[in-house]
Image (cartoon, rainbow, N blue to C red; front, top):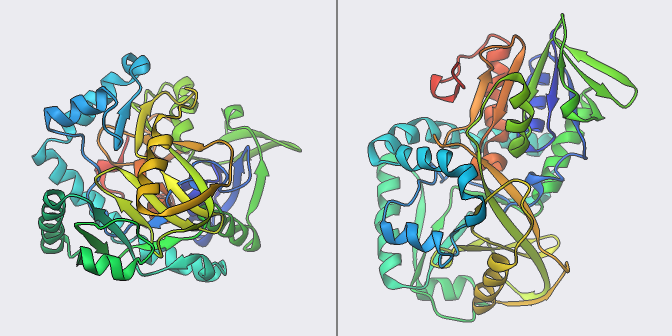
Length: 407
């Protein structure tokens, strides 16, 4: 029997551990914290089967300047750390050219469209159906011009990828979401997507399923990883843990772990903030305020208000700018109530210039496997790229070359 250590107990790591386990591999899942308590905890909780194209870098000079000067709440750049991530972001800009983006989207969409099929059996087996709704979410628009553009874009995605959407007028939204405080120009209701009332709890439920099926879960420090004559070893709580294979699924911490092994991963980080509110009257379904770049999502803890992306260093301290702006924008839409937490949570999305995750074998180390760099879609794609990697490790599946790290 093959054996494997999976480093990282977020959605990507847990999805990978379950997929390997299903193929008969003896798996140890290792993380410094319990499953689902890092980046997988704090997202908008949407399994986005409609997100068939990755987010491209802005192409218009005005959009770029707005982000750089902090005027754009969708994307904000932390100027003090620009010199450290300028190279990867420049490559991201080049990869976002229309022809390149279309080639990337062909691979990306094939994975995204399988996400529901990969999550569904895990949701059922984990007994987590009470966390999931299968009736989509809305992109809402304040300005008629941006709504008209969104309608054309939704039609293009339907035509090219088969993405289902319902176009709603301002009156339609007012009826569907009667707690809205202001009138809106319209909305695109993406009906293929699913929403989750507690993404951290869903990840933890998947981890319990892995344990119930015989998997081992340990608290361990991934930085103790060492190559041995027979494979790989980490220091566990009761001594060394060894396996023939190891999967690095550490999200934003993956690049730092791999640097001593000679791999230079051009990773950059899109930080997101959120805060919960209770006692107000929010939306029935998750709602993205597309003109302001924020999300309002009903969760078990209350209304979760989420910001756009802040390009910054992994270790940079928190700022209040985006969450304060998000709270104001969300408060224009709904009565939020009172904050649950005194400070906003934040997490860092691990992004790569090519907008595709790195999934597969490391080119220079036997038994070393990689599964990270999912950007905005780790929660959506974790079980899917986990299944794909497990198939390659077991010799049952060939991964697309575009997902490889190269030499």
